[in-house]
Image (cartoon, rainbow, N blue to C red):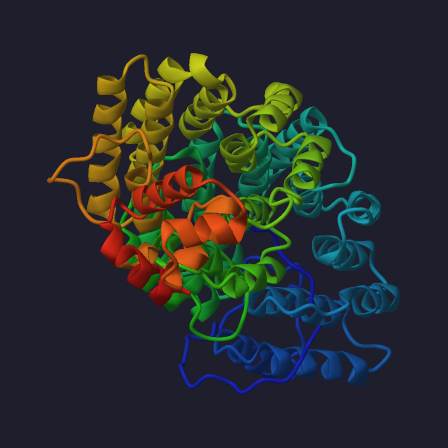
Length: 574
């Protein structure tokens, strides 16, 4: 889930698209009496941010704050600080906001203004320092008797982060904040606190989270001012995000479509497009997923860029013989504030490393799981254990035991757990794998179903059952363009060969080391150079029978191609 991110301006060209700029005070603001001379400056900065030139907007706000006279209204400084953090979130800039907001807080005279600026700083701070800053804000709001300020500060304390606070404490604080917000009847405060509580419930895998996201998203009017719309869009986005994580793909797609229609500025429109790409990838519409991901990447790098990079990396793994890991690696820097997306990216990257036969392909997985366990998070990390179970079942068995107390019980989390348990049980996991496949089919997640059917085929009670499962897997992969997964089944030595089998996809046919052992790669390299079986045996100091067996296995892993074509295919893939 996405949280507000801190601010650091850098220059870039402003896009030409135009967006509506609000002409009235923001519902979200604690500044009620902004000086008439400051209002056009705020509107100008807001307009720059909505058009995508966030660095120029931040420069303008910082310069304006520095030029304020000593006796300026407290509300002027509050309004500048609030807008600076919101504009930074639109562009995913990283400005060291702490000195700027702290200086503004020291310059104001009233406790409610200090509370507002400390609250704003707390939202832009690091996880470790945020609780202390928010407690300072809460003290100022209590001194001022500001119930609205107290409510949203408690709401922000509720948001899940690595700050050492327990989940139960967060829920208690979040409920207290929402109750205060409802007493004020302030729509922005209610939406803010409801969204923060829903986020906490999501990470704790509380069943009411999806319903509370809906409530949070529907509190505000459909076209509020642009600053208030930040929370409206954030709640809508996290609602879609949570539905996606639960495997409720129809709901996620609908909420993302609605979010794009209501979004203020290109930043949120791109984030909703990225959610659509994630849903399309998971539901097997890989062509649409690529199109949506490319749309989400249009413009300056930001969180949507990272989310889209995950999708492009996952699809490339299926459809390219040698997928370039760069787009996936680059995505990590844009999603570091969203643990759910970061963990998903790491799981896809681990799958890339396995496909490339890198040493220690799971090297980031244990650390990520430790982070999730340390946060007490019950949502978003499951795919890390799934990819571990596919590559290293024994290691996954330990991870399963460690993470069992935190394992999510939402529909997709339950399906992943069944899959992991089936994979780590080896020959005894056939029934669990089939049950997991059925659950994934209900979501639907067809490519994952195919992989589980293939895994179940490997531990099937008899050859006929195994081959029937492999055929079903091939049909799913072929229907959804999952070429690497289909090639893996076609290279399965236990697959009964028949004339009706499809060929290994061209993208996978040209990969000379696809699925080969070290010795098989050596044989393949010599075969590509035209060596006979006897010459291969002489070169590698093995028997001719062993050489022939290796050649046969290499041929099978390339779809049972005739020997006369093997050298040509391997040469083309070299």
